[in-house]
Length: 140
Image 1 (cartoon, one colour):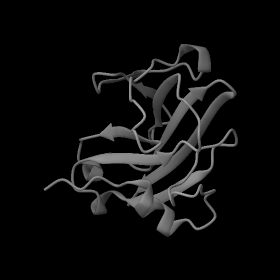
Image 2: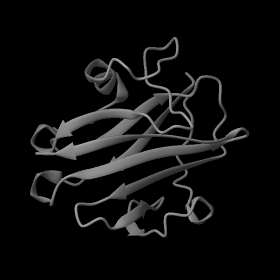
Image 3: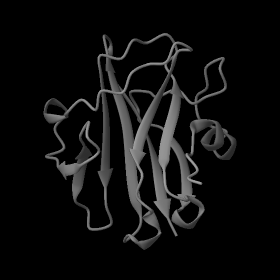
């Protein structure tokens, strides 16, 4: 069975993550580290759930920087495409806020153990005040 990592797990590993009252990490303009994980510990699916802290997302984004330093962005259909690292060229993944004020980013269903590591995944959302992000690192 695939195990999806959520920020509840990430929060337990990174106590310095800014938290809202719900106990989940909150993204910020300074892109905090949400955790560092071994690819071997991730079965198949990787997702991140964050507390929106009252924000209303206007767009959601997932980007990655692979070991070869190539930046990519995830599209709504789950495919990864090259990205020029410009915020105005981000493509909305279409993830929607839950009724409980959280947002879950489905990052990948791929088994990452066979990839060249590390991989840095950044999750972001646009709200009326700007872009908020956070990142996780997957390594051996």
